[in-house]
Image (tube, rainbow, N blue to C red; front, side):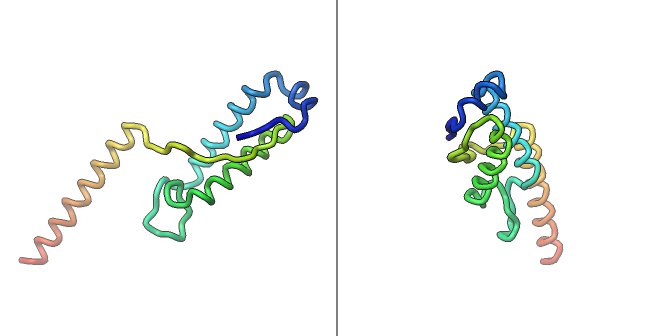
Length: 112
């Protein structure tokens, strides 16, 4: 959620402030996604899926930094849908299944 707080800056410093908000918000989100893991087993590691409050505040701050020059105030920013692309999800499932097979093999060899 955002609002224009300085109409002069919103009209004169950017060509289309609505488009500017969209582009800068997406850029901030992509940057955030590269800095944090999707999920983590360790609670001390901030992850996109498990630390939604911290991630939302970080996202809001980054979007605000990008939009300030356009006279726009970011009221709230949050990730509403978080999912991997199908190719990545498939590769992660294969990796998980391989790990399960290896673990089962180790248990079996220890039992013998």
